[in-house]
Image (cartoon, rainbow, N blue to C red; front, side, top):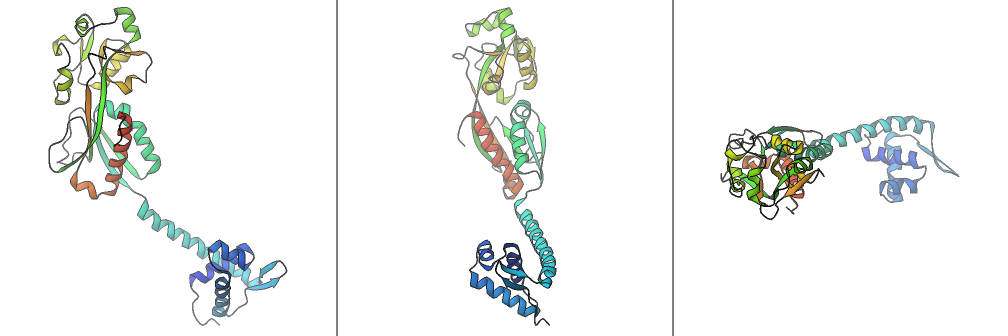
Length: 298
């Protein structure tokens, strides 16, 4: 009759001997010494008041009772492994919703592969992606993270500078074949140009580099996705992020010496969210990936 309840480490050693067939091999598999493992087996037999193994030329062979107990010990091992996985998951797996806001073109053209990579690493995170060329209020918690083209000034916001996105003037080869190629900025007056409808702060630095304004545009829209689509369709000449334009071999950069502004890019979140593990994880993932996109080291 058993004197006391055996500890789990004794059953673990017992299963290792069942699996490996010898004390020496079982000890190596567990990272133990052979004498220590031998003591575990003797202690288990003593606690249960049974014989679990017999010695043979081939090593240790389980008795009939040893075979029977091995089934129950294996169930204990499986439960222990499941417990460890559950505990590990609660510490390592990040779950929950993170709301990200950004411009249309960043959200539709830049972030999808970045978020796909995040999904592969952390499937428990749900992303709400809000696309708008007008900034959502992070102070009111309208969003958790924002990709912005203007440096935030509010003290309650945490901002990381990502880098400067190069911009350029582009047109489709089909448009240039029909309408010719401008040689200087002044030539743009004779071309169909694509630009903004309403003035926005992020556009002011770009606007000042052009020789004309809103009334001169042949197509006016505040949607940068619509502008990009019009350039790709051959409507006319418009501004575009260079990294996006380079994906399409039919888009030609024009007047790079005369028009080459940069769009400063910031990643922002409310300081209260620094303690949120999932928000911080998404923030850091976006920071690294966007830095790679703009070609700088964060």
